[in-house]
Length: 179
Figure 1 (cartoon, helix red, strand yellow):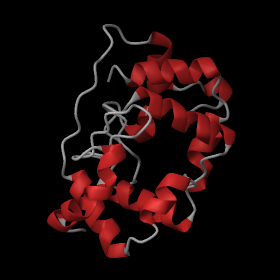
Figure 2 (tube, one colour; figure 1 turned 90 degrees about the vertical axis):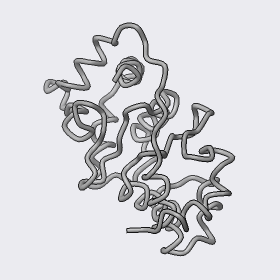
Figure 3 (cartoon, helix red, strand yellow; figure 1 turned 120 degrees about the vertical axis):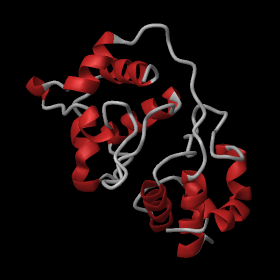
Figure 4 (cartoon, one colour; figure 1 turned 90 degrees about the horizontal axis):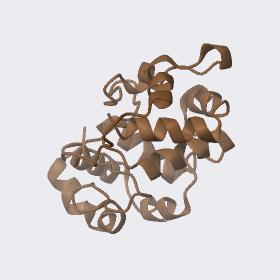
C-alpha cells in the first residue's frame, strides 16, 4: 500500500504520543507499531473525515494527504510491537467473555473478530489487541459503549459494548493484558 521510508520521514509529529516506532509509552495512547496497515489507514482517514471523533487526532491529520496516510500506515505497520508486562494469572471472567462471549446477554466472543491470540484480522480491518495498553483498551470499550466512538462497521462494537458492565470491561481489559 504505502511507502515505509516516506512514512518514517512523515512520522515526526506522531512521536510525542505514539513514540518513535509507534510504541506509545503513555498508557492512554495506543501502540500503533505492528498494527494492521489497513486498520491504521482506516483510522487516519476517519480521524480526518470526522467519522472518528478525536480533537487531537483531527488536528494531526488535517494536513495529511491520502498518500501521507498510506505511507504512515505502512511505516507503523512495519514496526514491531513492544511487549507489555503480563499478569501472573489471567482474569478468568475476562477469559470466558473473550473466548466464549455471553449468549444470554447477546455478547459475541472477542476472539471471533480479534482472534484467539489477540492478533486481530488484517483483511477485515479488525485491530490487534495483543500487547496493547490496558488503559487504552478500557477507554475504547467505554467509548463504544457510550456511543462517543462510532466508527465501527455496522455498529458491531457498539452493539456489543453497550451490553458490557463496568466489571465486564475491567475483566476483559485485565484478560487482554495476559494474551
